[in-house]
Image: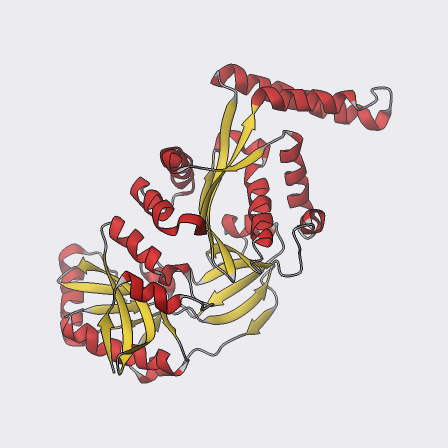
Length: 397
């Protein structure tokens, strides 16, 4: 029994007809990593010529060494092979002269309700990590490409493709109001083509700069599009300005200005018309993209991997409509869970991303976090101390 390197086809064949793995463990993701310039390895635990577990790893040079990361840990055919994979991974790391191995296992640790008040223990953290010499660490210590420790999800298994109104009612009042507002303007959602990836980048880039997080590159989005094919959708929410004005005017015509209850509504719609008209006069074009998202579909889970919105057009509530549309598409595909993906895990109200996702009344899932293993501990300590002295990059504990 040993760790070997396998082909893309071998990895895809092993995962075929299986469920419960992350898109971060797939052959498609391996090709995306290559496109980004990473040195990736498709690893497998082999026993008598048969693959029993797989793991997608990528490596990068660090100060006086090499770090290898498994973004979602291993996926095994049977539970017993998980620990065996990590046991033999240690030998592989030594053989390849890796100075640090970092693993983000795809294990569920805690379950919280949407407000993070109810806590339920799920799977116990496997004891074999400690027994094998892996050390648990806070996930924010490393700038990693893997899955976030804290994720926000919604269970869609009770909804059918005919339940659009029921799905809307399952959101909180603010979300319902925002989605109705977006529909009031006649916003449309469509799938973007490969040739539009630069346009996709413009929105995510603006969002990343505004919210101070790292955006992906154009090459990354193109690689996701090419390799995941029909398992991904790049969605964009747009407004047709002339049609929006017409739609708003029709809504005014349906109201009675003599009725007191309609008068405030008419004034609100007239202000909306003025806003849209001002944008049209400034932009000199009819269709404006407002927000976008990248969604990845697997059999058991659809993941809102990333997205963005333009700050100038927040009044149109496009991100809310996008999430609603993405969930309806997930339901129509028969996928039971919708994963809004990462949140910070700080439940003190400071996480704006979490506050947005809470509008949809889901739940919070905490993964087991990050584990690391250092095959050459003395060498690691020496270079770690030297790095701190020379560059001052790592604060003393």
